[in-house]
Length: 317
Image (tube, rainbow, N blue to C red; front, side, top):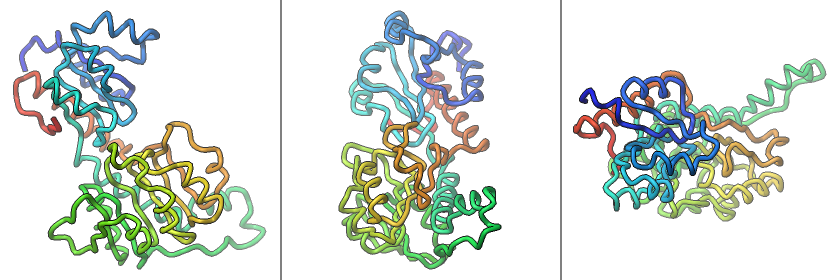
């Protein structure tokens, strides 16, 4: 990349990490949108100089932002998910898009297994039982084993495949639903999600969020999973109809849930807070020091490649 890169202006639309901010600032001039009270006025003032946008799972580049930045060349997101980016508009305008796949796969898969164990073995509730002094009054209740359970995976992509591999180590029977059947996989393919939910005890949501998959886990799917079933979501909150999930848990139509993501983050339905058969995490599946550094390095690498006239490291568009 040439020495003029410091004249290239990158707009960060949301806080990601101090490390990412520092690394981008080494090569580019950076504006942080959250520092400006009147965001619209700021964008209007600088619209002719911003050439790159950096986002994350929290915020990206919607149609409005893309239209307001005539010099925009690339959107680089510090996430695998692309639901915060208007990909069609980017393609139409010739704007490049890059994400951060692969580097977070292990962490997300690890957390999915962690959530399963936490829900089935009531790990968080047990911890509170000891801390509160309840143990002195009597033994903790019996829980449910994980080994040998049937696990259904919605979305057999990179992350889904690695979750399946980890679940296999627990002697689980694996089934999956995906847009298409995957060749060379020995797991049972269910073209219909309700059939998958009917035939598994634990359903892990690991697919991408698109217009087609929004609320793909609806009342029928939840009812098919049933009063002993457990739902794990490490994908996106909007993949699950949260209203239906809450009502199923409250009514006992679903056995439990482990959730890393929610429809309106950081807001979590109040009804979930008091439920002991639910484990709630603040969207941290990829939040390890090692992985967030690797993700940030990929974002910077993609920006440097683009402005250095080299192929993107992880191109999407």
